[in-house]
Length: 313
Ligand code: PAP
Image 1 (spheres, rainbow, N blue to C red):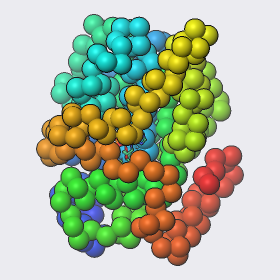
Image 2: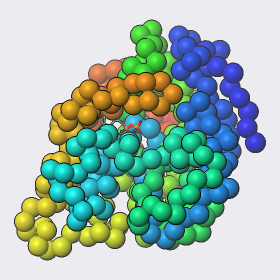
Image 3: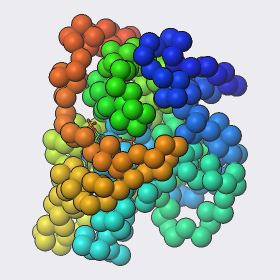
């Protein structure tokens, strides 16, 4: 079922082995030091989904932090005001835990029955790797994706920051994506799995795009709340609640919270929360990738996505 890539150093120049540790499992490349295969197997075996569950799914650097902040705020808005929400003192990553990185890593069969409904979970795993109980249930999955070129650049900055890899080039990072050998890759299969399910089961899987959220965050937030089963009332819309939530969860607001400026995350390697808030822009890749590199990845993507209705601008 799984095969180990001893180290990306053998195929990707200039990346240290400590930053690799990818294991092929069930058709995808899993960063198994952070998401151990044993945790994934436990999750697949033991997780019992409830119809009320909400799962935030994404590939790393597609907008996970933003989506977690929005989902947490929407669902809990009758419990917390924006001035006393836990988001003021905790990074969104700490409020919605990942199955494979946190929950099933800490215990192979944790008791999740006492978590108040709706339970909020997150995952970077592709759709085919989710526990069968999720696929059989009516729980809601919100998937966010992003222009893959921006994902490459965001991922490159992040990994360089976490692992202190000043010599690792963005071209090397792009090569990994072109081969489909980045963490949780290939990108195209990851996105296609959720895309297809969003078409097949639209009331269970919502497919969001980072760029569309940037363009019209109010409309996308309303759509998200509706999908989650927590729609905004007319009164809330009139009194500006949607705009307040959008502003609170915006890049500039979250980035400037003390917890995200100076706080630290202890996942594998202690790293700063501020690494999750870099520039928050659409199209930043043009400042890092040459037109030739973009064209090469674009050709691969077109080929891999051909025959599907999924496209990236
Ligand atoms: P993760 O999957 O590892 O948790 P994720 O949150 O998806 O990471 O990615 C971080 C990216 O989202 C960063 O993009 P950048 O490198 O291109 O800047 C980060 O800036 C961006 N981001 C974080 N919070 C927000 C937000 N509230 N609004 C918009 N973008 C955000």
